[in-house]
Length: 121
Image 1 (spheres, one colour):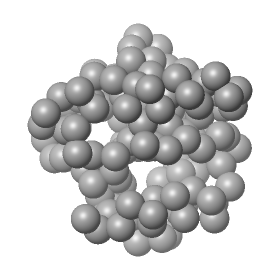
Image 2: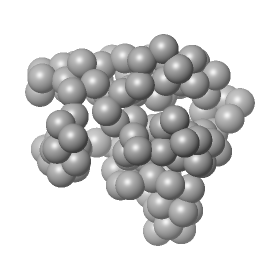
Image 3: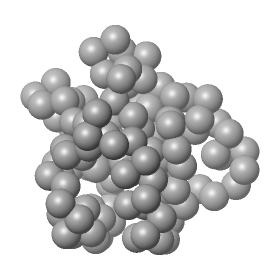
Image 4: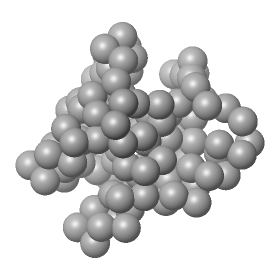
């Protein structure tokens, strides 16, 4: 499945802007959400081809939200890449156990992120 539409979930407006610019420059259509509730509404409106998920957010954190999304039959096929400042090995393992398909640590290396996204094409 080619990746065209990406849902970017992050509570930081700075990160949303920076990552949206990067993804748009690389030809992706980007929608954003600043928390779990907004992310679930965006998913229901228009299912993306891939989700970039922050971990540290108010309310439902990215680990919980990833588990919710990947266990929902409507969205289980949508790959989730964790994109977070939580860089410990235990964080990575936990993220993958919640259903994430890959993990990127902030600050994001643009080339690494784009390569990880393209690996799903």
